[in-house]
Figure 1 (cartoon, rainbow, N blue to C red):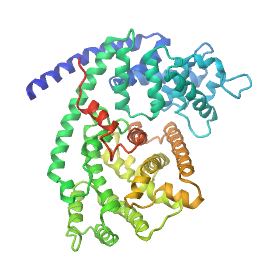
Figure 2 (cartoon, rainbow, N blue to C red):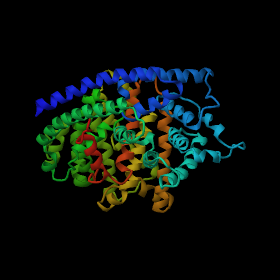
Figure 3 (tube, rainbow, N blue to C red):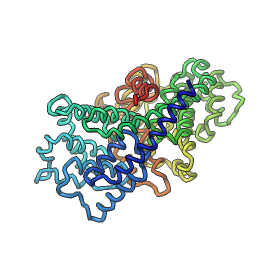
Figure 4 (cartoon, rainbow, N blue to C red):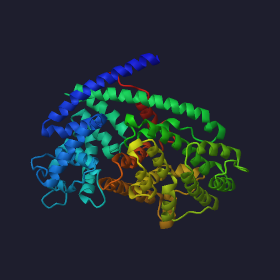
Length: 510
């Protein structure tokens, strides 16, 4: 069976090379008014990694023309074209101005023209583009508010005659393109494109074959990780740890560019570190007494591998961690975990500002990013690690986004289990507001952090590669997918199971 499967995969790869050549020719010869749609299609179905140089060259020319004023968004470009160009350029780090949407507003400039409501394709493109907004871009805030109710009505059957357009609208309302996990988005758009009349068979076949080859690689990686996890046997040896290896590997695939086949080592490093880190989280949240945690933390700071006088199950965790973590990050992490455990022990509810200072970092996204970087080869030179240690604005916004989304979704369940106060309880106490009011404020902060993330990606440090920056976008995207309908990490028998099956188990028929 292994031999047969290997031959099948080799056959897929041979077909991929032929299709790549044909599509590259199509991309280079496409008419100007078709090029952007073709790039969007190629990225949407997940085959852009085959054509990175070609896409960057085309979009670079587009941005150069705009910057020089030689192609300042032609007046005859329709809403779809203007919005798509804007979104693609911003996705690729080009800081184009949102002022280009002003011509779609009324003469008074106070609202968008009603005539665009009937242009559902254009309206959807404007909606998707608006989620690339940064702080202070009121026109894009207005675009979200304007498009959302009209698109919702269309998705409910009040205007979208094209069934695939109706599906795309419903999907975008749940997960705008900017917020969706890349690999999940690829699956959706492959299925949509297959149902689209007049679709390009070469593009569709390349998308399916490329997905199948990547899925085969994912399965092999997961097999290696499963063997390691079974040998470690932490869930049984500790009795309380969550057994979430597959969910964590799914998370790894969602980390920015880590879905690409070449980042196999990064997925492996991230999964090992995060899986053990999840056990650590459970230890401090739900298992150890404050006295045990104080002793355990002190032993880690001494780096006392003998763990004299430490509770036996905690010794097991420490032994597992010393094989996967660096001491500097571990000591910092457990100090933050312990501070939260002390809050719970004393019945202390910190101010919201104090909570943000401790807990946004205590979910350890710096640690997890560090693990991913270790497997990214030349994409992560030493300067990248130095940059991460400075806690840059992109990292802070991404980690706080994740913390707040987690809190909004899980706070009631965790309070019932006796966890430390979340941002919801901290905000309620400090400002004397109801639970709903606190959640509304925190949800607004989540959106504000999205704007900061977008802004930072448009103004990157010169010495940090794009692939590194996209890791922090990936953190935010995976949280939207896992926590958009509840806690899909802890309770993975929800829609998360369907996504896992589609991504890791079921290949496309080709």
